[in-house]
Length: 199
Image 1 (spheres, rainbow, N blue to C red):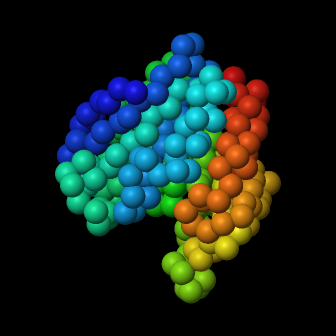
Image 2 (cartoon, one colour; image 1 turned 45 degrees about the vertical axis):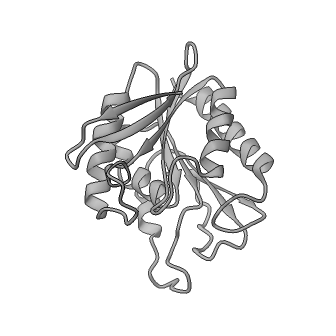
């Protein structure tokens, strides 16, 4: 794995690159609000992508690179993400995603990154116990195919399916640690479909 420091409007971000030979696509994944790129679900999704012939970039947002745990405001996260994806982009199609907060960033910026699909690991539909504070609009604004992998007992809610939005429910909660084989299989199947349909 190689690391690249990437300039953004809010300080340097860091990409952990796992390239494959002759990649069919590039999957760019962001971390959760208080976590990092070593989260089990991100690692598992990366493994599935590499096995499918897809290069992976696990991206640390500037606030994490600077050593802070509390996340930056949404507009800063989005601006940094757009800058990172632009610098990582090659000739192959780009798929974006992430876990929790990173999934929200990928959804909000889907049009700006030109992503061919969005992978959401543990999308936080609403704060725990606050279903009225829904973030469904962020999902509904995405105009490319979306895969959401969600723990059945996730306190952040269960996003609904839609014509271009598949939801895979796995045992477990927001950490998505309980069924890594199920997570790997879900990501692999979705990537295979994306690679078949993407020109």
